Amino acid sequence: MNVLTARAKRIDNGEWVEGYPIPFGDEIFMVGKGPQQVSEDIRPVYVAHCEAIKVDPATLGYETGKRDKNGEMIYGGMKVKYLKTGIIGDVVYFENAHIINFHDGNVGALWAYESKDLEIVKEGE
Image (cartoon, rainbow, N blue to C red):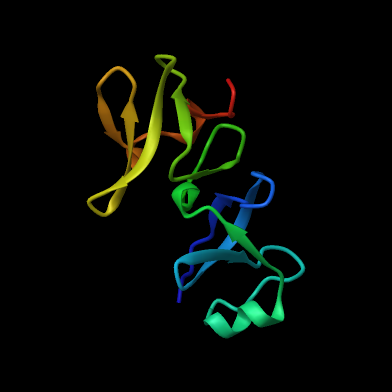
């Protein structure tokens, strides 16, 4: 079973964390990546056995499988720059695929772009 990692902002301090999202009622907790990595057969019971960080569900984005020119994983919700044009866009999940909604009004399928031509835009840039 393939389990995608995700990233989201912590509720307590606003920092980004990566891991495996576990829904618990109306809340979402992030567990796993690194020394406390959980099994790919994730069940809510694992939350009791590893660090669980409460995250903001509005910031949750799953890995896309695509990396940028620096080798960083691109997650849904990130902004990326298409280096051939310099145009920035938002990575969103739409109809079973990640796409880039470019700020000039164009849209493109993320899989169609080469990693060397994409760069993640850091917050505040």
